[in-house]
Image (cartoon, rainbow, N blue to C red; front, side, top):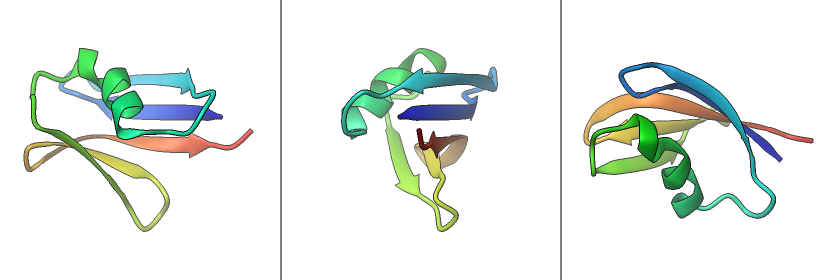
Length: 68
């Protein structure tokens, strides 16, 4: 499945990655790590199905799963 990363980090990076297996915390972290300076990164699923990216208490981007 394709995963769309929206406005990640201070540079507001936008990109799409292909996930060939189950989406895990480690896989998401590996994708966003180059764009974030924080070591306290977390992900939370929103009610609209998107995943919100947090660095500490700050929202630093969104992730949208695109079904194939």
